[in-house]
Amino acid sequence: MPQVGLIVNDGKPIAVSTAARLQQEFSAAGWVVERASSAGGRVGFATPEGSMQARCYDACVPGNFSQDLDLAIVLGGDGTVLSAARQTAPIGVPILTINTGHLGFLAEAYLRELDQVMERLLSRGWTVEDRSMLVVSVWRGELRRWEVLCLNEMALHREPLTSMCHFEVAIGRHAPVDIAADGVILSTPTGSTAYSLSAGGPVITPDCPVLQLTPVAPHSLASRALVFSDSEPVTVFPATPERLMMVVDGSAGCYVWPEDRVTIRRSPEPARFVRLQDHEFFRVLREKLGWGLPHVAKPGGGLAG
Image (cartoon, rainbow, N blue to C red; front, side):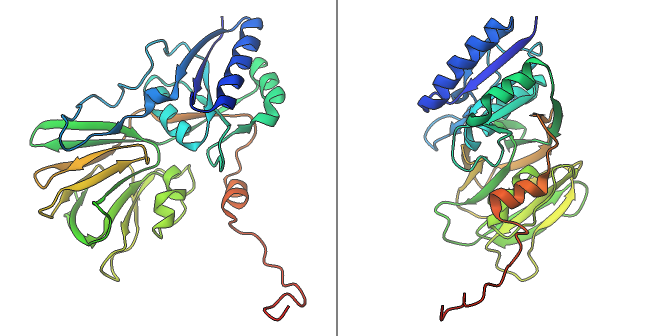
């Protein structure tokens, strides 16, 4: 008997009502339906006063989800998708993202297409695309203090983000380098269109097996974005006497102290995205970010006009 999961942003009424409709239609078609809140994938931020939870990166998987699920449908915006990736990647369950938010950069379908989506799913007319994820860990000596899965990026910076600090970054077996900047960003190809793009990093197509290191407001003309193999683990040492703030995917994070180190490595389990049609990445860039749109000069359209 086929099984489907529903991951719902319970804070959005449209997502909740859509989940109820999908549950009814799948059940009527003989599917087993398991439901979970996307809140389970929001790790949140550890305060400096509270104890950090050193849970393993796979701790966000819902208790009622298993590898037997054929797929999970995610109802929400891009933030919900980031949470859902933590809930499904460790058990290899592919996710179909239906946007109920605003930009929907990670969306595969929209609510207006729900009838066509159900038809494709019930006939099993889909493919799966893998996207690399990162395991981000904070260590003090041999003690792992904090860990989380990351689909987009890890950003490490001073709090507030108004002054320069130093970072020692070691990539694989290579000699460490010193970066003087307001912060550093480690991103996946999926995350190259998020915070890293705003910081001046390049866009990387999702099929490239690489990571990207992007300094934030670097204090050197030589410090620019670096793209390297994702088989290389990365270690970041905060070479500054003040505590730093680490933010992962915009919804998780903790403080990093001078005696800590941050390690970033490719996760052994990718995020798996259900595709109902050929995923044309450049088309998404054009429609969502305006990349490559033709410039058409309009007569009389200058400043005087």
